[in-house]
Image (cartoon, rainbow, N blue to C red; front, side):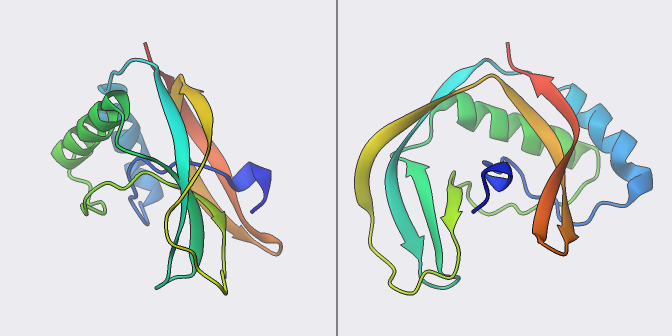
Length: 138
């Protein structure tokens, strides 16, 4: 993975019509949270899509609260999103040929102080992300 593509998805919206972006921003403007620590301590793979990822051992309270508030506000504004159980992870590898089960790794701690609305834009060198707006926590 390229460094600039590393991210932790909080809520996956899929395609959002451009004319609805202001409504989405208004909904997310109502979300408030506090900074929190995210400690990535595990590496694992999903066999079905051959992705290797880093993940925390559990769901930090600050992250869980942020995701719940985002879901509530985005839903109230009439947006659809992937409503499966939230599983925080950072994709590190694609097309893993020898998947491994969950491994403990030395913790990488990340102090999360903001979150952003990001657009995924396909290009000739792969996908890149364009930040539309960010919000500070705290």
